[in-house]
Length: 211
Ligand SMILES: Cc1cc2nc3c(=O)[nH]c(=O)nc-3n(C[C@H](O)[C@H](O)[C@H](O)COP(=O)(O)O)c2cc1C
Image (cartoon, rainbow, N blue to C red; front, top):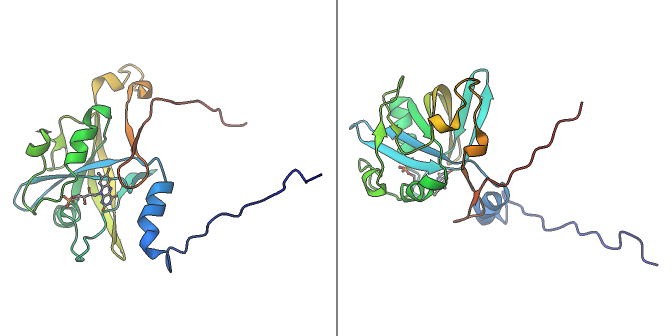
């Protein structure tokens, strides 16, 4: 009789710092999924509002409330407009993306020349923020006003850490009596496998913690 565990596969091993370096993006971005998407607005020195999505993004902590986004440098070594703008203005807004805004978000990922806003081409408009000069996206269900805490340059990665100073949430997503977020109404989308896959997030389940 064969044993119950007749064959154990140890799988493929990638050496992302060595011979598989050219696979690093495809492997990591396809495996670390789903990822939240920060749809970042930032302000150029010329006052032009820039918008771009970043899925190397997460909340980092709550005391103080902090988020991180990570634009990679362009192949020629220059920073993306978002990183450039944050370096000059020390602030940005993280807007979140739901099913209704997913296509507009994707349009804002186009590489436009510095000083040209992605907003008109994507049919987007803005609303003033409360404590930063950078406006938020009127179409986004959620926007977080952030002040730069610091930026870590890790090779070509620029990990921008922001302290969240205000959170704007569309009325229907908040129970105004309890201030609970009605997450069952929040049709947020996530980033899946590289290069072009996304997920909806309405198939959810609850699991209580032990103890
Ligand atoms: C869903 C999505 C997520 C993205 N995430 C990142 C990311 O985490 N880091 C990055 O450097 N580029 C990312 N990109 C590509 C940037 O959005 C793109 O380079 C954009 O042109 C940068 O704009 P900017 O130069 O105005 O900052 C992503 C694109 C999409 C569509």
